[in-house]
Image 1 (cartoon, rainbow over the protein chains, first blue to last red):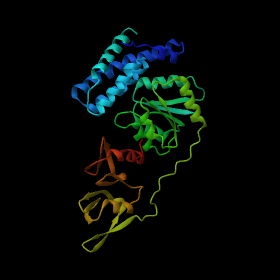
Image 2 (image 1 turned 45 degrees about the vertical axis):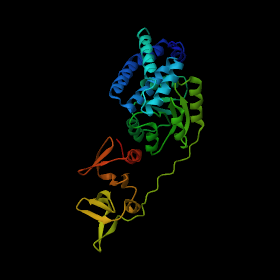
Image 3 (image 1 turned 90 degrees about the vertical axis):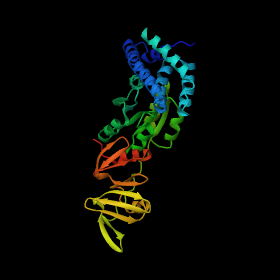
Image 4 (image 1 turned 30 degrees about the vertical axis):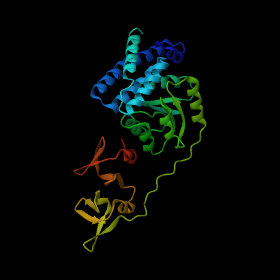
Length: 105
Length: 233
């Protein structure tokens, strides 16, 4: 499985440690909230809400360089519009991978 | 250029702020996680450029665009280009950026915004030449109704119910016919069965308005027009 990275964050920060820290801190605070909201919506089977949650999380997936997972999340988001949860398992694996990664950032 | 950022994701707003620091002549005045707050800000502040996320819950970027009275230039930011296509019918949409946004692409979009000249948007036509009252035919009697006194018109089958401050009337007509006689400055069709006097609105909540004691549904498609017509503080 592909591994997350902070190449994009480093590019944006251009060597400025304060900028790097700001960006990392925002991801560290925003991602767990969005992840939690996703599972709450999933529990309620609120497809519109799940789609919104996936859309938001997708951005974090791309920021962390997970290109393949981003493609899978896109497909999952599309399936949700058809009220199908196909792709949820892969998506949730990605969330776990990111959770582990940001813990050590 | 004075700019604002509208995006429900904090990381997206922080990234745009970071990118803007790399560009001269760009000043971020404010950032908003909610499009309605941004509309209020635009009513009171001059803004040259908006970085606007399309995909936001409740009131999305397209609703926001449709609600703008005097739109500044806009650069759309999105994870999904298909959402940007619909917005491109507007002259003031300068460019769209796919997330995650790269600095070089961001710079190009801002330069495009600086150079783009936008035609003044033609103001909405107001039926100002229409009289302040009209007559309705009830039981072969013509009754004069003062337009500002009307607060709600409801379609019910082949009839319309006209509610005024003093009295209610039932007239054999259609909403379409009466809509043509009403001034845009006062009235708005907010649902296929309802026209309201926007000056009489007490409050708006989610997808309904409270007008006098009536709670009236607002169609999703009519909500941007309603927001545009209100003087938000």
